[in-house]
Image (cartoon, rainbow, N blue to C red):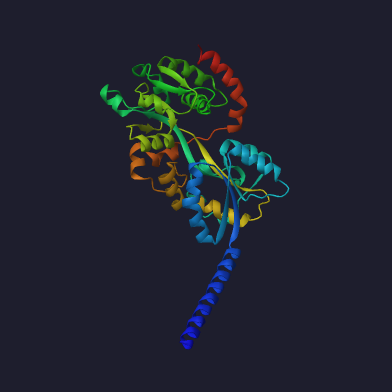
Length: 356
């Protein structure tokens, strides 16, 4: 009996020793992991990063990622406050505010040698001076209800100018000028008629032709109620929002890129100036624009990939017309000029377009 107790005691002590050794090994492994602080968006993007991107990245690069939630203005404010002693390594900032953050010296260029996936992304997602990269696209175009078109034997949409077609009278929804989509619409209408953001007059002239077709100027950027109620046959929207809407509701909506070209707003990310873990930050951005991460993003968030090698989910490809070719038809805009001109355009829009 005593011998048995001694044997059991020895076994327990051995197990305890192994547990201590194992715990020490885990602690050593945890300490060895390189930290990375990521400031990025709340909501669905946060869930996507925490469940899909961060675990894969941590495993592949022996890293430990801390996620700080915030929108673009909030993140920029943090970067300003921490400028002398940065606590964030990678910041997600929309491409418009990214211009501001870049100009304030809050961001730094990535190391091209570490960006092996850079060659595979859309040109529009390669931001100036190597500072920041786009990682999710929201491309502009025309969402429409194919059932309404079929019932009335309407020809397909091909151009931005199709918004003025008489057969669409009273069934077009356009955002109000208070929504950032509308300055983009004005610019694309201008480009379709010989102008651009530097010469916006053709855009306003075309909008006068479109006015009779518009039944409302939406102030929410959410066109879903108008399509559901049957009022809207056509709306100016993004491919990502169209896809997400169809996924949620199974509503028969389609999306087309006008032949004159399109542009996009995009979610972007950059290495913070003076980041303590800049090397790992570069690797994180490279991973984020890789085909695997981009395909996960398209599947989980419904955002359009910036990586040209990423395969779209089959149901997405069925909703979004010719996604492969749209990259060749992308146009870059002078976002700084758009920001500067917006007050004047808003005043003009309110007088000439969205009048009572």
